[in-house]
Length: 99
Length: 165
Image (cartoon, rainbow over all chains, first blue to last red; front, side, top):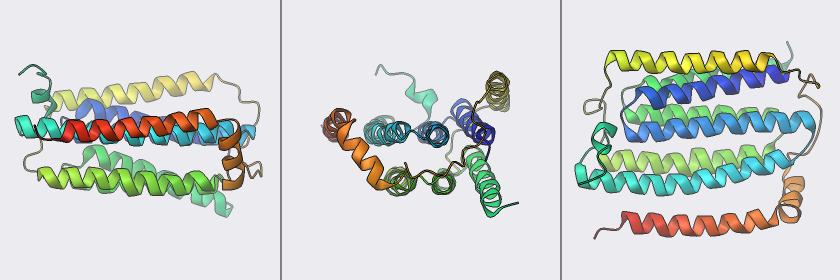
């Protein structure tokens, strides 16, 4: 496969993630779209690592997954906490951090 | 068409369609299921590129752990399509338009790049567990240990935030 196809696919997936962040109001869906964007980057990095025959990029993909897992744990805890306080995951309500 | 090309196109179509399903389905549960399918398609791409370790880790960590966490949270909050907050049509259209513009801009920028090596189908075994493990425990052992501290602090933070007080 030419590398251009992988670039095309990754950019498309990344743009879908950006679209989702911009057009949804549910905080959990926005979070999921961020995961989608991270995965698009991971895919492109693996493709480049394959192209150059260097395994460092795959180790970095592994670290991206580690950081994403930690991020999801903390982020979902924050969302659950906010849901407990305001009984909604709507970001238009969540944007008032005071009170 | 070789079997690899067919697999590439099928997996790409699945990934893109399910990615669109994530952002366009009203019910959050459906979004989660679409996202799991997308992750499986991406794992298929990893296998196609002979990155077996990452394929397995992607399935275990993303499709297994993270998405189950999302499902649990959504079920805990009892979210469904009826209570789903929606942006106005105009804002949704603006979001799709800006995402599409970003896609076009990045593609136009990347068209100028001359990639020296044409193909990614060079037969290598860098993605195998043995090679990646050796790399991880020799060159990248300090970041590896640091990530364990990051995990520990994230765990403590999540428990601390989620605790009732």
